[in-house]
Length: 127
View 1 (cartoon, rainbow, N blue to C red):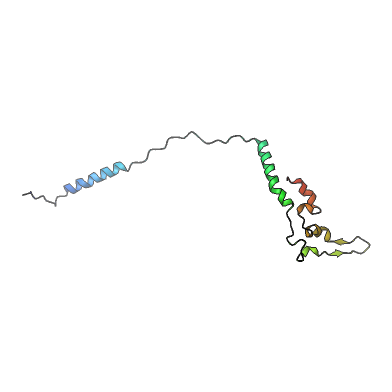
View 2 (cartoon, rainbow, N blue to C red):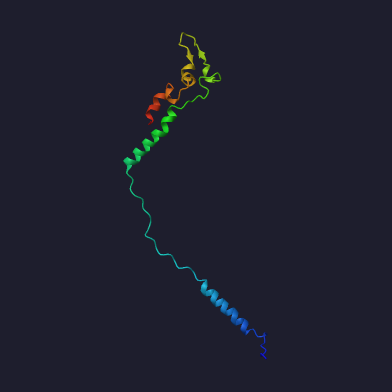
């Protein structure tokens, strides 16, 4: 027959709890601090000439289609509202003033480069 052990004593239970606390505390240590890196990152020096050359050549390819883009989608059609011009004849023998000068190039299907004042300035843009 096996001897009877008393479960009333808390010594065994206290020993088990103590072992769990000690083992748990040993595994929950703080992680070691990371090693110091090589230092702050630095950027390489930029060649300004190459940067400007790349920018202007890329800008030329992007701006060139905009200068010739058709601004009036209904140009040369019966629905074109810019096809109708208005002319005013002032008194005192002055020359008549009309909207055909501004709307004529747009009504013909032109773009920014075909406008009277803006077209000359668009030549400054690359492309």
